[in-house]
Image (cartoon, rainbow, N blue to C red; front, side, top):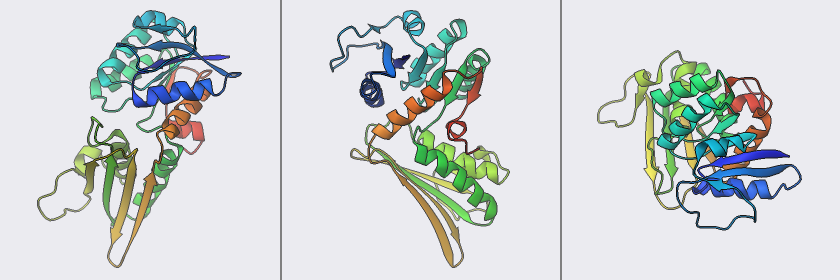
Length: 254
Protein backbone atom coordinates (compact mmCIF):
# COMPACT_ATOMS: atom_id res chain seq x y z
CA UNK A 1 0.00 0.00 0.00
CA UNK A 2 1.06 3.56 -0.66
CA UNK A 3 2.11 5.36 2.52
CA UNK A 4 1.04 9.00 2.37
CA UNK A 5 2.48 11.60 4.71
CA UNK A 6 0.23 14.50 5.71
CA UNK A 7 2.07 17.77 6.29
CA UNK A 8 -0.28 20.33 7.81
CA UNK A 9 -2.76 17.82 9.21
CA UNK A 10 -4.29 20.27 11.68
CA UNK A 11 -5.66 22.45 8.85
CA UNK A 12 -9.06 22.13 7.19
CA UNK A 13 -7.80 20.28 4.12
CA UNK A 14 -5.33 18.15 6.07
CA UNK A 15 -8.09 16.57 8.09
CA UNK A 16 -10.14 15.86 4.97
CA UNK A 17 -7.13 14.20 3.34
CA UNK A 18 -6.83 11.89 6.34
CA UNK A 19 -10.52 10.97 6.01
CA UNK A 20 -10.10 10.25 2.29
CA UNK A 21 -7.07 8.01 2.89
CA UNK A 22 -8.92 6.05 5.56
CA UNK A 23 -11.80 5.50 3.12
CA UNK A 24 -9.50 3.45 0.83
CA UNK A 25 -7.94 1.01 3.35
CA UNK A 26 -6.75 -1.57 0.81
CA UNK A 27 -4.85 0.91 -1.36
CA UNK A 28 -3.72 3.80 0.82
CA UNK A 29 -2.48 4.22 4.35
CA UNK A 30 -1.24 7.07 6.52
CA UNK A 31 2.53 6.84 6.64
CA UNK A 32 3.00 9.71 9.07
CA UNK A 33 1.36 12.91 10.22
CA UNK A 34 3.42 16.01 10.90
CA UNK A 35 2.01 18.49 13.38
CA UNK A 36 3.41 21.38 15.37
CA UNK A 37 0.57 21.40 17.87
CA UNK A 38 -1.88 18.87 19.23
CA UNK A 39 -4.61 17.62 16.92
CA UNK A 40 -8.19 18.32 17.99
CA UNK A 41 -9.53 15.11 16.45
CA UNK A 42 -8.85 11.41 16.92
CA UNK A 43 -6.81 9.16 14.63
CA UNK A 44 -6.80 5.38 14.11
CA UNK A 45 -4.82 3.46 16.69
CA UNK A 46 -1.15 3.16 15.73
CA UNK A 47 -1.03 6.31 13.59
CA UNK A 48 2.44 7.84 13.64
CA UNK A 49 2.27 11.51 14.62
CA UNK A 50 5.46 13.52 14.94
CA UNK A 51 6.93 17.03 15.02
CA UNK A 52 10.30 15.69 13.82
CA UNK A 53 10.40 16.51 10.12
CA UNK A 54 13.16 14.03 9.27
CA UNK A 55 11.30 11.14 10.93
CA UNK A 56 8.17 12.22 9.12
CA UNK A 57 9.81 12.12 5.69
CA UNK A 58 11.42 8.73 6.27
CA UNK A 59 8.04 7.12 7.04
CA UNK A 60 6.34 8.21 3.79
CA UNK A 61 6.28 7.10 0.17
CA UNK A 62 4.79 10.42 -0.91
CA UNK A 63 3.94 13.63 0.97
CA UNK A 64 0.93 15.92 0.66
CA UNK A 65 1.51 19.43 1.98
CA UNK A 66 -1.32 21.81 2.89
CA UNK A 67 0.36 23.97 5.51
CA UNK A 68 1.70 27.54 5.48
CA UNK A 69 4.44 29.19 3.39
CA UNK A 70 6.88 29.11 6.34
CA UNK A 71 6.15 25.43 7.05
CA UNK A 72 6.40 24.51 3.36
CA UNK A 73 9.80 26.21 3.25
CA UNK A 74 11.02 24.04 6.15
CA UNK A 75 9.70 20.94 4.40
CA UNK A 76 11.43 21.83 1.14
CA UNK A 77 14.75 22.40 2.89
CA UNK A 78 14.47 18.96 4.46
CA UNK A 79 13.57 17.39 1.12
CA UNK A 80 16.82 18.72 -0.31
CA UNK A 81 18.63 16.28 1.98
CA UNK A 82 16.04 13.49 1.94
CA UNK A 83 14.29 13.62 -1.45
CA UNK A 84 10.76 12.23 -1.55
CA UNK A 85 7.79 12.76 -3.93
CA UNK A 86 5.70 15.65 -2.68
CA UNK A 87 2.40 17.29 -3.65
CA UNK A 88 2.26 20.92 -2.55
CA UNK A 89 -1.07 22.70 -2.23
CA UNK A 90 0.05 25.52 0.07
CA UNK A 91 -0.73 28.95 -1.37
CA UNK A 92 0.89 32.33 -0.78
CA UNK A 93 4.43 31.14 -1.57
CA UNK A 94 6.93 33.88 -2.40
CA UNK A 95 9.54 33.83 -5.17
CA UNK A 96 12.30 32.47 -2.92
CA UNK A 97 10.09 29.58 -1.80
CA UNK A 98 9.17 28.81 -5.41
CA UNK A 99 12.87 28.85 -6.31
CA UNK A 100 13.52 26.39 -3.50
CA UNK A 101 10.78 24.20 -4.95
CA UNK A 102 12.59 24.25 -8.30
CA UNK A 103 15.80 23.20 -6.57
CA UNK A 104 14.14 20.27 -4.79
CA UNK A 105 12.46 19.14 -8.02
CA UNK A 106 15.90 18.33 -9.44
CA UNK A 107 16.19 15.60 -6.81
CA UNK A 108 12.59 14.40 -6.38
CA UNK A 109 9.27 14.66 -8.23
CA UNK A 110 7.22 17.61 -6.99
CA UNK A 111 3.75 18.70 -8.01
CA UNK A 112 2.61 22.22 -7.19
CA UNK A 113 -0.94 23.48 -7.66
CA UNK A 114 -2.62 26.53 -6.15
CA UNK A 115 -5.89 24.63 -6.39
CA UNK A 116 -6.31 20.84 -6.37
CA UNK A 117 -9.74 20.93 -7.99
CA UNK A 118 -10.02 19.10 -11.31
CA UNK A 119 -12.58 21.67 -12.43
CA UNK A 120 -10.17 24.57 -11.83
CA UNK A 121 -7.39 22.77 -13.71
CA UNK A 122 -9.65 22.37 -16.74
CA UNK A 123 -10.89 25.95 -16.40
CA UNK A 124 -7.32 27.23 -16.59
CA UNK A 125 -6.88 25.59 -19.98
CA UNK A 126 -10.23 26.86 -21.26
CA UNK A 127 -9.71 30.50 -20.30
CA UNK A 128 -6.20 30.59 -21.74
CA UNK A 129 -7.66 29.59 -25.11
CA UNK A 130 -10.44 32.20 -24.79
CA UNK A 131 -7.98 34.96 -23.79
CA UNK A 132 -5.88 34.22 -26.86
CA UNK A 133 -8.88 33.96 -29.19
CA UNK A 134 -10.37 37.25 -27.92
CA UNK A 135 -7.33 39.56 -27.60
CA UNK A 136 -9.45 42.71 -27.33
CA UNK A 137 -11.86 41.47 -24.67
CA UNK A 138 -11.62 43.08 -21.23
CA UNK A 139 -10.78 40.42 -18.64
CA UNK A 140 -12.13 40.73 -15.10
CA UNK A 141 -11.74 37.99 -12.47
CA UNK A 142 -13.49 37.81 -9.10
CA UNK A 143 -13.15 35.31 -6.26
CA UNK A 144 -14.74 34.75 -2.88
CA UNK A 145 -13.53 32.53 -0.04
CA UNK A 146 -14.38 31.98 3.61
CA UNK A 147 -13.58 34.66 6.16
CA UNK A 148 -10.51 32.84 7.52
CA UNK A 149 -8.53 32.62 4.27
CA UNK A 150 -5.14 34.19 4.86
CA UNK A 151 -4.01 35.21 1.37
CA UNK A 152 -5.67 37.67 -0.99
CA UNK A 153 -5.74 37.52 -3.94
CA UNK A 154 -5.91 33.74 -3.61
CA UNK A 155 -3.33 31.52 -5.24
CA UNK A 156 -6.07 30.17 -7.48
CA UNK A 157 -7.13 33.54 -8.84
CA UNK A 158 -3.49 34.50 -9.45
CA UNK A 159 -3.03 31.30 -11.45
CA UNK A 160 -6.17 32.02 -13.48
CA UNK A 161 -5.02 35.59 -14.17
CA UNK A 162 -1.54 34.39 -15.09
CA UNK A 163 -3.00 31.88 -17.57
CA UNK A 164 -4.85 34.70 -19.32
CA UNK A 165 -1.87 37.05 -19.28
CA UNK A 166 0.54 34.41 -20.58
CA UNK A 167 -1.86 33.48 -23.39
CA UNK A 168 -1.68 37.10 -24.55
CA UNK A 169 2.09 37.36 -24.23
CA UNK A 170 2.25 39.42 -21.03
CA UNK A 171 3.80 38.88 -17.61
CA UNK A 172 1.13 38.99 -14.91
CA UNK A 173 2.74 41.90 -13.06
CA UNK A 174 2.50 43.98 -16.24
CA UNK A 175 -1.28 43.77 -16.54
CA UNK A 176 -2.88 42.76 -13.23
CA UNK A 177 -4.86 45.40 -11.32
CA UNK A 178 -6.24 44.63 -7.86
CA UNK A 179 -7.52 48.12 -7.10
CA UNK A 180 -9.02 50.38 -9.73
CA UNK A 181 -9.63 54.09 -9.17
CA UNK A 182 -9.51 55.35 -12.74
CA UNK A 183 -10.69 54.41 -16.22
CA UNK A 184 -9.77 50.94 -17.42
CA UNK A 185 -6.58 50.75 -19.48
CA UNK A 186 -5.93 48.43 -22.45
CA UNK A 187 -4.75 44.88 -21.61
CA UNK A 188 -5.58 45.19 -17.91
CA UNK A 189 -6.70 42.09 -16.06
CA UNK A 190 -8.79 43.11 -13.07
CA UNK A 191 -8.78 40.92 -9.95
CA UNK A 192 -11.25 41.33 -7.08
CA UNK A 193 -11.10 39.35 -3.82
CA UNK A 194 -14.07 38.95 -1.46
CA UNK A 195 -14.04 37.21 1.94
CA UNK A 196 -17.00 36.08 3.99
CA UNK A 197 -18.88 33.26 5.66
CA UNK A 198 -17.82 29.67 5.01
CA UNK A 199 -17.56 29.81 1.20
CA UNK A 200 -15.27 27.01 -0.03
CA UNK A 201 -14.40 28.90 -3.18
CA UNK A 202 -16.03 30.64 -6.14
CA UNK A 203 -14.11 32.02 -9.12
CA UNK A 204 -15.59 33.91 -12.06
CA UNK A 205 -13.63 34.94 -15.16
CA UNK A 206 -15.35 37.38 -17.50
CA UNK A 207 -14.43 38.34 -21.07
CA UNK A 208 -16.28 41.58 -21.82
CA UNK A 209 -16.73 42.96 -25.34
CA UNK A 210 -18.99 45.53 -27.00
CA UNK A 211 -22.41 43.96 -27.36
CA UNK A 212 -21.65 40.62 -25.68
CA UNK A 213 -19.63 38.94 -22.97
CA UNK A 214 -18.62 35.49 -21.75
CA UNK A 215 -18.38 34.44 -18.10
CA UNK A 216 -16.98 31.22 -16.68
CA UNK A 217 -17.64 30.33 -13.04
CA UNK A 218 -16.31 27.52 -10.90
CA UNK A 219 -17.97 26.78 -7.57
CA UNK A 220 -16.43 24.53 -4.95
CA UNK A 221 -19.36 23.29 -2.89
CA UNK A 222 -17.18 21.17 -0.58
CA UNK A 223 -13.52 21.25 0.43
CA UNK A 224 -13.48 17.50 -0.16
CA UNK A 225 -12.72 18.19 -3.84
CA UNK A 226 -9.33 19.59 -2.82
CA UNK A 227 -8.52 16.53 -0.70
CA UNK A 228 -9.60 14.13 -3.44
CA UNK A 229 -7.61 16.07 -6.03
CA UNK A 230 -4.47 16.04 -3.88
CA UNK A 231 -4.68 12.27 -3.42
CA UNK A 232 -5.18 11.77 -7.16
CA UNK A 233 -2.04 13.84 -7.73
CA UNK A 234 -0.08 11.86 -5.11
CA UNK A 235 -1.00 8.54 -6.75
CA UNK A 236 0.11 9.89 -10.13
CA UNK A 237 3.32 11.46 -8.83
CA UNK A 238 4.76 8.65 -6.71
CA UNK A 239 6.64 6.87 -9.53
CA UNK A 240 7.63 9.88 -11.62
CA UNK A 241 11.16 11.13 -12.32
CA UNK A 242 12.48 14.23 -10.54
CA UNK A 243 10.81 17.30 -12.00
CA UNK A 244 8.29 20.01 -11.15
CA UNK A 245 4.85 18.92 -12.37
CA UNK A 246 1.42 20.55 -12.61
CA UNK A 247 -2.07 19.19 -12.05
CA UNK A 248 -2.74 19.70 -15.77
CA UNK A 249 -0.19 17.00 -16.50
CA UNK A 250 -2.10 14.63 -14.24
CA UNK A 251 -5.24 15.31 -16.28
CA UNK A 252 -3.30 15.27 -19.58
CA UNK A 253 -4.76 18.61 -20.69
CA UNK A 254 -1.52 20.44 -21.42
